[in-house]
Image (cartoon, rainbow, N blue to C red):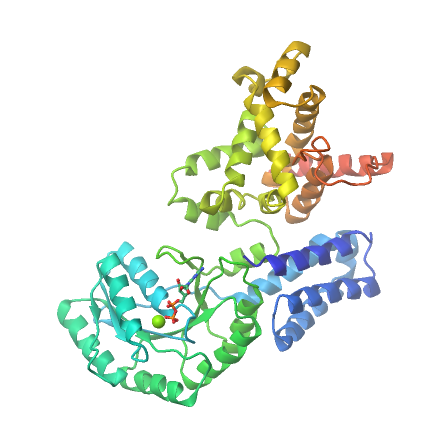
Length: 489
Ligand SMILES: Nc1nc2c(ncn2[C@@H]2O[C@H](COP(=O)(O)OP(=O)(O)O)[C@@H](O)[C@H]2O)c(=O)[nH]1
Ligand SMILES: [Mg+2]
């Protein structure tokens, strides 16, 4: 999710990092890169403009501070501005105590309204609140059946009347039945069009006036980029929106739409849809989203998502071991295996700070092959060897290498690189954003992520060794992070 936006911003920060101290003029260049990244991620121009204005004002105002810790400061400013633009948090459905709450979903055809009806119903069921769904999309007969299918899957009542041509009447009758049946929430699934048209808007406006829904949510397809802004604007003028639900943020959606829609409508982003299943609806958290955009890793979201997964304990253990520096080769193998998995498990592991980028790297075929080899090597060690690699002498080394089908020196290389990586991973689990970015680069340079052809190196770099100055700099950074950690930061 949000990959193009985060990659763009990361390269922006990288270009800032390379320059040592920031001056007013070279920071302008850096800010321009940030601007470019936002535009490339399909954030609409006016939004980018006002966003950049804020960031620039703040960044230039803090010139002195910036020269001390330039990138960290700028990351922080961009992060805070992102949070400000995306907030505030309000994922409450504002249910009425004394009567049935009416929630109306609207949006373009295919934006995910009907699916979202099911997701909201599931959410309510989890809270032991009884919903009823109303099929008010009378444009296509299939739409009514689609909602019935969802109702059957969730065991939730659905009201429809294929004979009725007026969606307002359908909604009114639906509400009446819901009240009778003791449902606490009615969700109206309305019609959409491929593009905005007057007739559709008039129909929705009529439902809005006659039913007077408690909450009107606009469902926006996160994949639509710039178009999302236009349609959101149109819906917002015609209806009084109370919130936005953005769907399909699981694919390679360009996060930009979220920023723009928020800017255009001004209403809270309530939820984000991250898949086709009914449980793929997450309350929107601006901090989490801003972090993701900046690739800091979103621990809270991970923890929440992990509730539905059996291996939660294992993940926590791994993260703790990473943080305490007690990670063994055995744990490392587990981590690699988990991250290489498709789907939720891999996604979850990638939410450990810094692991997002690692997982991205693993999607590269060459790297994936190297990772397999690394796993193979660890597999052919005994348990004791995995816990204490110092046990590995020449004969053990040959046995392990033979088992994994590689040359013996590879075993040494793996162990050495693992030892080098341990403190880095430890800091990644506890360090600041800027430190994590720095660490990630070190891991990439150190080559723990494997490559089947050229030993365990990640990238086929020029093979240049670090200069003593560079090594000293890295050591300093490591020590600084350690000190900070010891101080309990
Ligand atoms: N990947 C993904 N697909 C979604 C999401 N929400 C909806 N969809 C899919 O988008 C398509 C259109 O959804 P639908 O609910 O019928 O849209 P509607 O026309 O607005 O009612 C369906 O194939 C859904 O499965 C989501 O959050 N992620
Ligand atoms: Mg529909």
